Image (cartoon, rainbow, N blue to C red; front, side, top):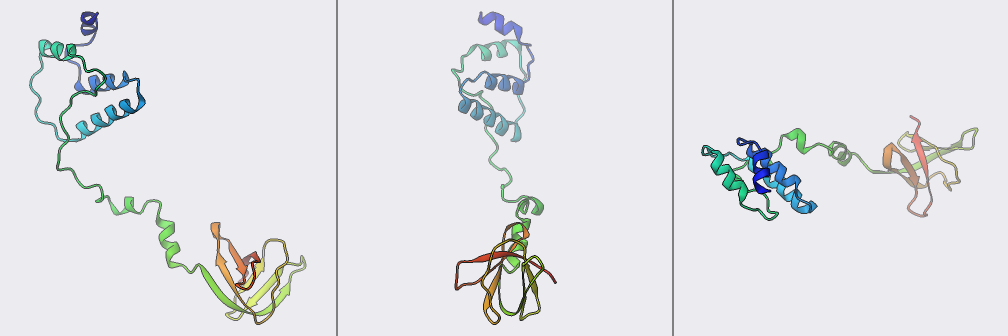
Length: 176
């Protein structure tokens, strides 16, 4: 049986193909993953010149059982480039929005200078710095002229009007 399996493989098979086939035969998922990882490490390192292969050498190498162990491949090179030296664009990937958010103000305290309501009974508040904010959600929010309130930045470009004296808040948008 072993002779028929040796005859079915070509005599000059690629070592990478052999290693991949051996990994595919692994039944245990963890062992299969480790086997693929070791192949990846071996192929990314600098390989020394391989000795000439003969059919007799390959047959003796294939005849030795591996007992579920990954194929013996050259050890990875020690002098690899450090992983932290990625290009600047790759280091900031996915963090661009967080860096700009760090520079922005997350909460602004203001004093109410005037209060009015829209025809739909939405609150419109003008603060002492000239900013006008309008209620976007429904609900009642107790507010009076001269009180100190905050506008807090929320998720997805939303803003909340609130006060430190109570737990209530409402969603608002800037009018001007």
